[in-house]
Length: 103
Image 1 (cartoon, one colour):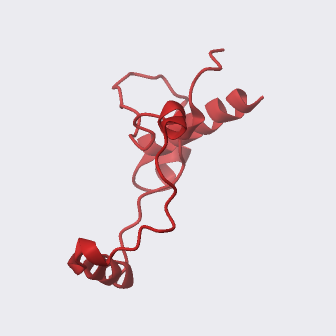
Image 2: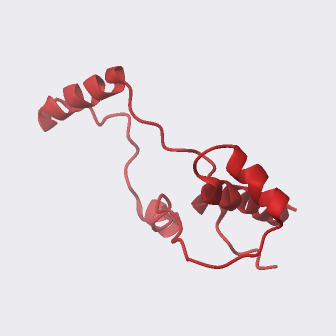
């Protein structure tokens, strides 16, 4: 198994819509002039930082269409959970992949 896969690219987090409070906070931040932002608690970006920086850490993996044969009862179980059964299949497989990579 290829152990060089960067685990930071994989996540089970689902995207939730922003709450009204979160939207209001973002709007207030967006309205602030740049001069009022306090950067004093941010460490300087040294050469050492850039040497260890990772590219595209938050980019989601590309999806690829495929055909998979699944037992009927397994497929019905996945579909019984509601909309998004293909995403559930992917999440289950990702969970198993990450578990194997951690061992």
